[in-house]
Length: 296
Image (cartoon, rainbow, N blue to C red; front, side, top):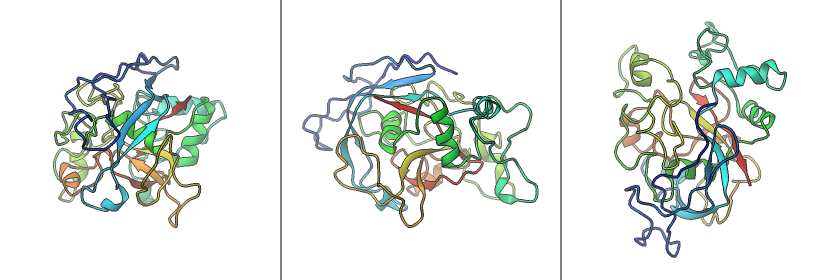
């Protein structure tokens, strides 16, 4: 596992005044925060301190109703993987008989294009082509669980309401694994993953793309499955929200962070890469991965 699990929160703020978004006490993303650090005793995990943070947005464009309203949510202390689960880590779980294999690439099935299970040299890349039950199965085998949407979003944004892990500057390949320019033409995969055509190794855009707590690749690379069922934005989420009790009409999990094929143009249209974005996922695919969390 990568990382030292020290959980140093860097520029998280945590001084949320009276809890009203926009009251001037929410921080400006300059890295001068007040939230006290905590240390994770879980290997490869970052400790995220208890406290309030700004979740959601007031609508950034495409399907904006999923993100609203912006609100202050309080979370208990928790721990989250510094990096996305890799093929190598997942393979050990399969070999131990505790996990089922991801989908492998099938030349007769376009939906598996980019699924690389069984290929040589993939152990250090983020696992993909697993559904949400397989992701949960893996986390449970580690004594962990999938992060809730709120946990995932705080780990990525910190407490100052920033749009991206690094701040509010538009996403580029300096910060994240994404399409290096808007994807057009007959072979767009040449632009995917900052010109690699695939997801990159976890931490390839660290430290400049890290979250305020030092969590890697929260933007781009592979989109990440969370524990929550997808539903329209909900007001008054309060403390330690876990999403709806049952699936909505589409039975999708909330999927966060965009992927290696998302471009800046996509995000300018109001979706995919900014951390408030809520996509539907959980069925698995080459752009779908995950990380685990431990609650206290």
